[in-house]
Amino acid sequence: MNRWILGARPRTLPAAVVPVLVGTAVAAGSGIIWWRAAAALVVALALQVATNYANDLSDGVRGTDGPQRVGPARLVGSGLAGATEVRLAMLVAFGVAAVAGLALAVAVTPWLLLVGAASIAAGWLYTGGPRPYGYLGLGEVFVFVFFGLVATVGSVYVHQQEVPALVWPAAVAVGFLACSLLVVNNLRDRPTDAESGKRTLAVRMGDRPTRILYVVLIDGALIVGSLCAVSRPWAILVLGAGVVAGPAVRRVLADAEGPDLIDVLGRTGRTQLVAGALLTLGLVLSV
Image (cartoon, rainbow, N blue to C red; front, side, top):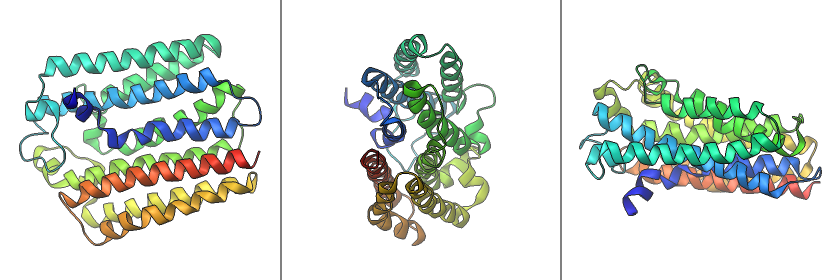
């Protein structure tokens, strides 16, 4: 069981939880349907876990995640599980997301089926398929769109069946936070990714620009999120997450590398959770 928890990459799961929390908080005041909020959370978590297994499978088969890897061991690359086992785990996770998404589509609108299909396709094609976009430096685009805009806006829409203006700065902030996780992960893996031909954005940009991008994403998330205070004043609480983000930002700017960036990844996940929780609290208190 521990190997499957490892393969699910718990440190990345805030990227699934935060958009649902924030989107549901935006919908507060207009009537939240709690089973739909729970279903949206299941969809987001299952998609994140399935994407992580898909990434593990594809990178392991391609030989990207070999013994030279600095970060946590991957299932296929390290031999902890076979490709067939990981493929099955991926399909089960995608299946859970599909079932929960189908329930929402039946209750809300069939258009959600298209959103779900696009999300599943994007999760697989990140490192799977003949031309994985994660190998072309486009991973951050996927994360911003699906774990920022789509997940946050969708979490509002299942309650209101409309998209209020307030959700956009909230969704951009959530997207920036999700991207910061991927950026610091790829910063850590940049040397080995370059050797294996995986042209992530970090590989394409180089070391220092990637570090600057990380800081821009963290700071930008807090600033853009605070703009929600224009209509819901207590949303300004999100700036308090800067206290948690500070140590991670300082370590990245101080040229931390290799194993040191594993700790930064954990701190980034905590920053995402704290920022999401504070923004959620602020949005709800202001209703």
